[in-house]
View 1 (spheres, each protein chain N blue to C red):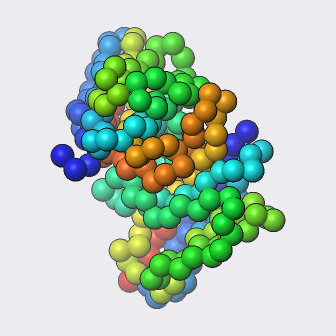
View 2: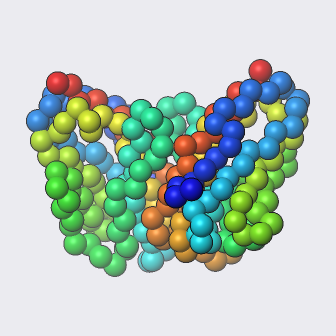
View 3: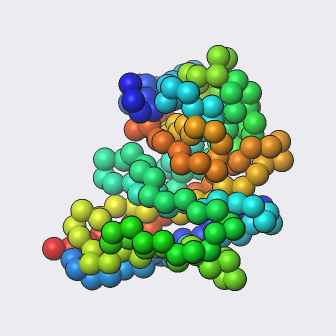
Length: 114
Length: 117
């Protein structure tokens, strides 16, 4: 597709379960970002990939969160032992080169932990 | 460290009024980039503008204008003759080089704009 695609659009999971959220960036975009947005808040930075490597993962809240981008395109955000506080909209964005260029956002995955 | 402050949580105006959304940032870098994004009720963030730290020239695009002032670390956004369709949450963002190279972008908390008919 032409834009950033995130799947699923909605995910409801039970506390303690493992979830994977997928991001398919715009073809050719080397930079990929994951953000988390809680209700009424701005996007909170989680991790930034440049190609296959995580250039900055300082926003990951704890070791239950992990993200990969093995081939420099699709990325998966993985959350282990989910907690109710993980409930939020998880946004993915990609840009053509780096964070200094326009980022294109996906529609987000709304994660609800019950 | 990076920081973006949008002090206005919500603003309500009547259609055709002008409205300015404030953004103040903090950075230790001399090279950085500033952005404004719009998040309509549909939820998807839409890019509006990017400025680099070396270009303080103000910009106008239709009803939108931006005032970048390094002396006050501000990058304010004005909508002239507001319309109901402008109702959205607007985010200011700052991108600066991270410790590992590359640029990391952080967002302010956003300003929710209501434009009433």
